[in-house]
Length: 476
Image 1 (cartoon, rainbow, N blue to C red):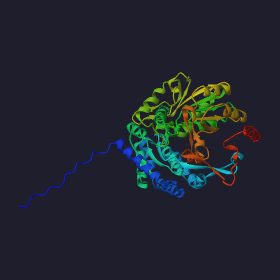
Image 2: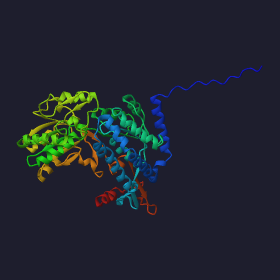
Image 3: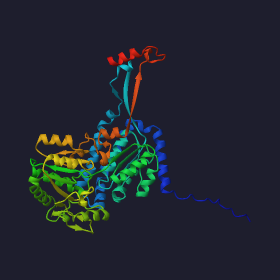
Image 4: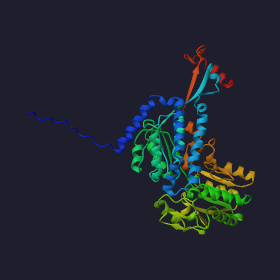
């Protein structure tokens, strides 16, 4: 009788840890980048076109995901997230070849004969960390810049909006190999695993508090960073403003996405002579936008989770409530609310509100308003409503802020030709359009020196050439 044969036993490999997974992803992308495949501009265009088609194909799925996450109105989801991203893509595809060309710059006679160029080159492997409030747009817009510049990219969507994060992950995994673009989902621990790795560029959108953590981590390896943060962005309304227009545009900018917008008007400084009229106009506009009961309006979003709901609800006891104030704990609903008689000592004025609560404060002179704005941290945005060209010039010259509008709110974000970014605690670095391409590109400076002439003046021994050199530099 033959002896039974035994199959060789193998010890199963231990499951891959989250940290190991991140390490492997970064190494894969680094190897892929070093193969130089992303340097070809045609490759970049093809990959952007794939993204363009994927977004169009999944538009409804994206809208449904954001509605599931925080009941974001479909109109707002398309206008501020999908449509915005598609415009950014079109603009990039149209101009990419021009942006990627080496740019010749003026030469100095010191280098004669020579020609000098700036070559935009990708950094390598980029990390993009997105927030929850505009979970699609604020992930994909910087990704477009990273792809256009020729980088490999790891994306970290927010765990606070899991449905949208899952759709983003699905789109990326179905259309790209992870050695080129990958999505890593997870919470704080996952983000820490990512920050433990060495990237060539980090792009972060979120709170100032977390931005400081990101910058500390990047400093360990001298990794360049862009921080898109926030702050208390003011709207200034002067007595000569079109008050009805100002009320309408401020109400729209404040309460879109239930106020969960980094560039929303955080508070209003209105000239004291027209303050009461302005408040009444805002209250009427809220009614016009959302009806008698905004909780029943299909056009008003919800607060993203209980933690943010509780924080915002605590602000409702500050000052004097002029309109709104209704809440629903079950759906995380807070009504569009206007607060009067608020001071800078109230909790609502101590940090960025990031919700549907609008404090209205007054000022006497325009200089007082400017001093109020400049007295705090530099905001991400500022909105001025005035019909006076002189007053517009004074505010734009003297007030410190990242970007903004005159006689409107939010709309500066819609122009891809305008760089978007903060200053001071509201962030560093700008993006959108060509600025995104430049942001994710190292500007490599190269001089091409002619060989047919080689003046001996610069070479030792210098002997008595110093006076000749001094005369030459004065002549220049």
